[in-house]
Length: 314
Image (cartoon, one colour):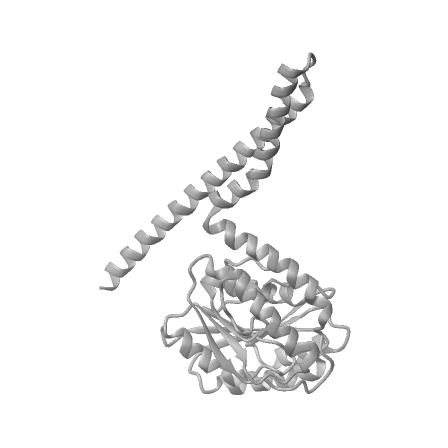
């Protein structure tokens, strides 16, 4: 990674008027030892307090700080996505706006990216949160996410992460998807690392997280599993989807044959349903085969590109 890299620090804020200024001070202090140009993007997620006013005052004092405001509260993932879309840096750092993430850890993320990784995820190994409502559900959720997605991250919920811009800008984000970025990026072969980071107790305001988010996370996890599974083996999964249609079609065919030989009347309805489900199964397998062809073609192109890049480097 070249020395003159440009950083973008993305911070979603929701009712964090007391934290906005101390966080700005902590970020600028944490980046003072790095000889990099940077920008800070505060994304006000429809705050009801004076968060936007405080952020705007800071932006007038420092042109490196940009403020994006939502008209209403949309959630952390849309706010993060807005910051990513507006970021100009080659490396993007995301973090929470409640002062629990420590900007002093940012240099460690840059060092890890320099080792050749595309995404570096923070692990709050000494997490300063409530045991029952935060720590225990987090441990269970991270274990489930790792098993389902095949990407074993200890702390998917940690917002302090570093990304190469060309990777993260291609990852679609919605609902609570920000915690599944490593799993989504793994589809394209991104190299992912995890490092220990400091975690502080909340100083101001109240937490915006709770057990009510569990059902959203589970739904998103189901979506991620489907995307990851279908992207790598589309023919297999579309064939599995076609099995019920094949079964119904085969059963309808047997019933139609029975009526044709054992009964004087012939059920045109059952025969028609059998043909329709057979056609559905055929098209599902066809779509899977097409997806497999596209996936394999993409792999060949990536392999050729990697070969050309290696030749250029040598």
